[in-house]
Length: 302
Image: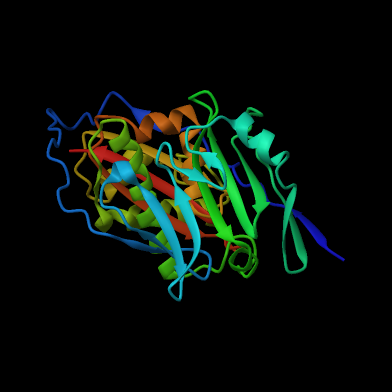
């Protein structure tokens, strides 16, 4: 007999914090105008028994291949015009509905059934997951662009169902993989919008990790922490030299792709991700007792 748990995929993220009054302690700002010239092919640990591999250095041509023991077991496609399982990036949500009907209502891991929720807090459909040709395939829709298919992720069914619970098993390697992939996903969005990619200040990740950890430990979900401090206070205390600043937080999604897609469908978060004034970024992930990652994403410019 299956136990039932509700595990919404895209809920639990707050409105974004951004500030146009800038840092009052700074009298001038400089915008980084040089692009990052040396982009290396990267890999990211996932919650599955596989790693994501970025195989194209051009952010505008961003896609991922999931591999385990040299076998391709997953993928993530964002390139306009490319088709996955008969659905083109840039197609409409109605095309998915016509071809595949209603999405799955639940997914089952061992003795537990997790309900899938495809709507955001306003009741809008943001994505749908289907079992197609022995793959779990999720189509993400863009609420800000006529509900077109923004991107598609697919995982081999055997790989999906061998995952450790809904969220996967926490580890330092997984935390780093989630953090690093989030930065690449954000830079992809910026480049296709004609903006500079953000410089990843990984040395400051502990600042963001501490806020994620505090949200879990002290049971709050807010930009204001349990001490009454805000993101600018945490940046100052951490020694970050900033002029513009902003922060996104998220939880409830089981990986960075799902979290990023949720943030891009939230106006305030999307503004932060695509804000031209920002030049730098750092990210901190921590896991709660169920293995669910909490994200704190800090943006700033010097």
